[in-house]
Length: 167
Image 1 (cartoon, rainbow, N blue to C red):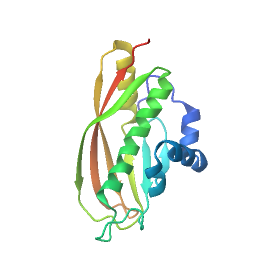
Image 2: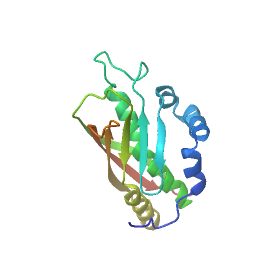
Image 3: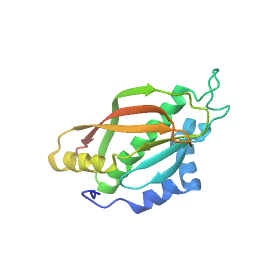
């Protein structure tokens, strides 16, 4: 396995893995994700797995998880890795989703997990924008599955990163 170009911020990893720490973060920054019941199940410099419950808060009228709730969990699985890379770099870098593609293959009728394994790629992208000052775009892929392994959806988020200029 490749290593990131700089060490991951272990304090942020610990906070995001902690139910209390992550809950406090969601409550302050992403209250809709907190209401939906998102959880980070796995998180390190290489991957992030975010789970989404099936229930009245995330359900559509067709007895499955609403596509927008899936999108929120999928985006967090990629965005948390980007946040980790930026915070670990100790530099000020902006991040923004500039595009998203999704496909849905099966109804999600149980707690679902979205796994992104593009952590090293995002660390490399952040390293590049810091060293060159150039903006970088990166496509990050995440796959949603139910507990039995059945794939429910796939998402690709295009993230844009740019080192901020000092004032």
